[in-house]
Image 1 (cartoon, rainbow, N blue to C red):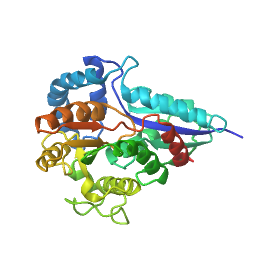
Image 2 (tube, one colour; image 1 turned 45 degrees about the vertical axis):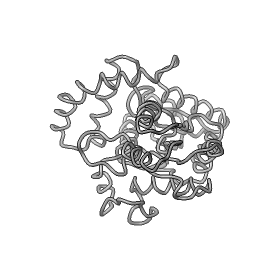
Image 3 (cartoon, rainbow, N blue to C red; image 1 turned 180 degrees about the vertical axis):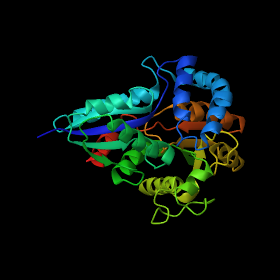
Image 4 (cartoon, rainbow, N blue to C red; image 1 turned 90 degrees about the vertical axis):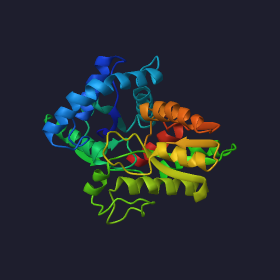
Length: 330
């Protein structure tokens, strides 16, 4: 029986800890029309006139804070996850890992699966967004056009509500909730509000979004709030004990709220001293979790009078996550 294939796709990371490597990564990433969805000429001017000259040195400095002997944490954890999943499915599937931007290249990952008749494509983003999942689907199909043999494809659009994902993430959080804490902040990657409107929502909610349904099935914000609801339900955590927020906004465009940095101020004003933060939009620790939350947010929290900020690690290559991933893919 022919082997089946599973393609895991991550966003990407610089290939080397250098200004050249960071510029190359940012240039590839931010040239994507689904990521920076503005007219091509404006995107070009913004990228080469503003972002690359000013942001590259700052991004390099941030990566220096988290880089390991093995390399970028995102790549290290993602490759460990692939290895574990391959071991779990060694008799039935070939598992490949590709980065949307950077190495291992997506085309090389697809080449590893060239003999598979059936391929499941799983972008490792629990919640759907056109700038991540949508871009991945486009890149996969574009790369497959270069192949003579086209496999049967199954795309997994999202898994924000999948019972196996919720179970694995709740198990990750549970030990931290057994220790004394005041509040749990669930911080998701943000998006410009216009992306939400483009997904079909008639308006961007300011409070908690309704459960995804016919009218908001692919609303990123609604999917994030549903992940929070399902996670805290599994953990038996009441609403006053947790908050959902959004991080990593860039530029002057209005992004989805509430913003994580502003939420830190709000929580400090409520006399919360011991804060837990988890990032359920990420399945592997990366710059946005380790540096933005683990370092920048921690420093901000202390300056606001907070006593402890504990960043809960992502699923990374946790054994429970590997089993959950198997369930999601199969």
